[in-house]
View 1: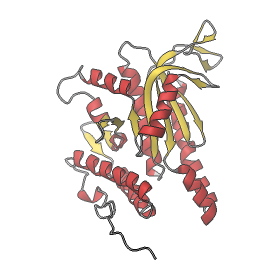
View 2: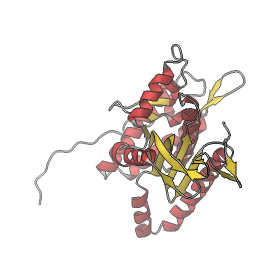
View 3: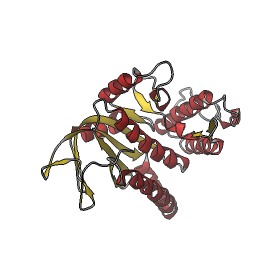
View 4: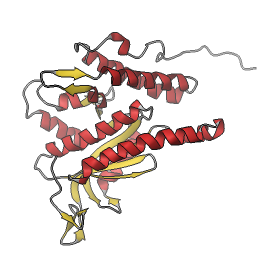
Length: 283
């Protein structure tokens, strides 16, 4: 991972010039946990507040520590507050392909590890002007990433802005056939919007071949099914996890050729089926 070119007194200064803060073209991701505020409210009502706090604090602390490890010696920047994370990477190359890869890897790992503990991430990844240091984040890239998270990313996925999508299309053009890493790392949703394929974290590079992390894929299935059961009576939330189940099963189809795979890793179609009802006379 590319190291930060500028550092002063232990603080990275990639967003400073002659001691003054400056904008730089950057990737910026805004991430949060889907439905977390409602989970907090519910936990106080049903007496599980301490259990939720303990579970969330443990996985978040571990995930943030990993993000910090990734960013301390690189040009990646991050901030966290409650269940929100901002991750950014300033431009250092002409085409920004490497920067996209570094940003994607960190987001994907965070998203995957949180999902395995039942905390599903929704967010947006934008590219635009940005300033970021140890105290603040400022710029259009942040505003666009936040808008993507709050207005576009209906489901628990990290979606790309239009300009980032154009860059991905450009990067794919560098390769022949299916050789482009972006073909695996990024998917297109039914609405045409690109999003990060975080389940590729289940594919492990070995000495002689790739391996499927079957244990983690089964755990992801279990967490999705638990969410579907928990929100079965709340259609607006259930639909988000039904979408996630479809994504999980799509990914399963793409890795069905691995020796470690079996069909039991898919989310049950019965659990994620949309329920229809006839209108009845109100009493």
